[in-house]
Image (cartoon, rainbow, N blue to C red; front, side, top):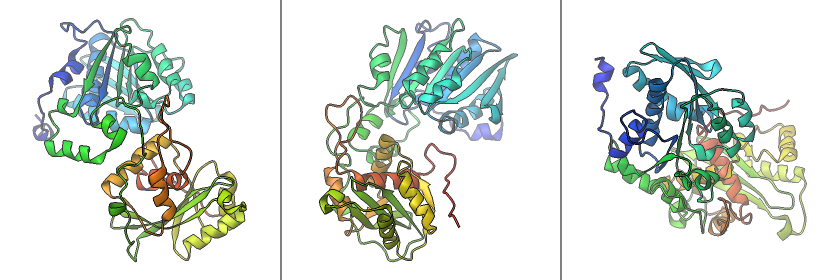
Length: 424
């Protein structure tokens, strides 16, 4: 046994994890299912068990066949699945050869060899990437984050006799298409359904479970900690507290950014951010509501306000909604600031802001009155078939979300961070 193997600490699997690992085996009473769904809380051990089980099943039934492993993006798939299971597979005797340029992993064991292709299903256009393939099985990690068209195309590729489907996810809105189509109908689809909680992962220490319980609140707590499919209701950021989050900013900062939600008829909201000691402070803001003021401002007037907000500070970049093309071009022509298109996924962005509020990573000056007002008014849309927010009192909320997703949490689901260079 290698030194690395000796140092690795293995914890006995829970009963539910053992089911996910062994359901397909010849002696298992569950072997005749065509698919498996593992859903539930974060850190409940479902991804690791399912991924290892998927590869082991593939070699028990096939050789010289192709399989697909799918995530929201290839970067997230590599982070969540590939980098975790490859060392384990190698210790179990599998030979794994990664071909990065082809997004392919060739795995061999005991004279058998199979191909595992990696796919990202981030949008409707992703379905075209997997068309034309013939697969013996597919693993869909974070399936609720993928468009239905991509998932159905991946399943349609599994035409080899004996092929099976493997689904893994955290809960979302109860009207999500995957919940409606697969979880509610798992019996009709001959699908094994396993629901996980953190207690199903014996490797989690009680202190770690308590940390996750502190991280989330509202619908995200019910979904990620309790593992429930619930609708988001009420205030979007119930964890925001004037006592905790409104503070007098320090005098010095290590770096600065400005985030922008640009509007013509709708309000424009810009926030100046500074980092100190690993925390980000919204130092001051600009908020212009054309309806309240009775007039609209031009791009040039908003640019002047942007310059005034920045003062003489060394701004690293202006983070702006990608749809604000005319104002982005106006900033570039000004030649003073670099411009970065913001990540604009609403629900993921709200989750990131929620996490940062819970952890105290973002704080606000008492001068940011528009921000404080919107935190109290920003609400989920009731009786909606999906997670959506009421498009009112959301302009400071949007620019904060852009900033958090693009700068504070820049490593989430991305491989690099880029800004547009200044023009001469």
